[in-house]
Image (cartoon, rainbow, N blue to C red; front, side, top):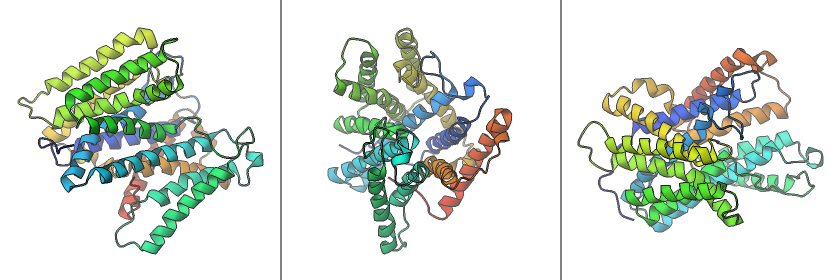
Length: 394
């Protein structure tokens, strides 16, 4: 793969802003999920509903941002002189880490027989959430090598032990990938997409064809009686999310890997329209559903994410209005830690039977306000974590 000479190599602050805003909304809606008596438009739509809310946009926004970052990540490594083995070792480790963390998170939620486990499910969940922080923390260069190895390898040993301490509802020992979890789905989508990106050397036309293939595979997989082979279902299922990652790559290339003669990026506008039209045309056949992963949901999500990014690009890169985004940036630079930290807090409270939030804040408007305050607190916590060099890096 060759270096993309035309790819803009400076930091794209608008991508960071979109990531930070997405994380803030994610923390808010995740906390809100346990609050009763809130409007449906503030929650995920049911699987059988032909609709989506802004909550159903959070996950694809992450996928879209992953895609936007792929061309820069590969180009940076090529410029540094990293070879094939180094690049793919890093890529596979990143994808595998996301999948492993995702599976542990899912198994912490359900599927266990707590009466047969040696430790309580709450303590198991606390360790499952906390150990990845020790393993994948980005330790500073002046950090003690002995202490670093103790924390990392100790965390790995704990995760291995947790696998054997887990007792399924059937009585079997060990976890199963009931589903991959949000992080696991991101890991698989990332892996599928970057493999193809590498094979075609990041060519725009090839990524467009890959996007079409992803949407086609998704449509076939959801159609009854066409192809029902387990391997096709597995692949097509992950290509569903790869479609959004690929859309992010395409938009990134259209913005930053070519010279734009006018102030209006007509190519991006055309692709936004194509995303909407594709979603509209496929909706009568599959509906809009995040839970089912329908092609209309992926294409509408890609279109909305493109519009949001275009606005941030105009505001921050062209108009140079960036000061407002300082609040979101600590989370943008530490996304994995802020995703895991609420789970650590939840299972810590559950393990030690702590009830820090009164029931008054678990319902209606007080619950909404609490969820908002919790999200703000998490962003402030990331500012402190970054200051003391607690940063997860895969």
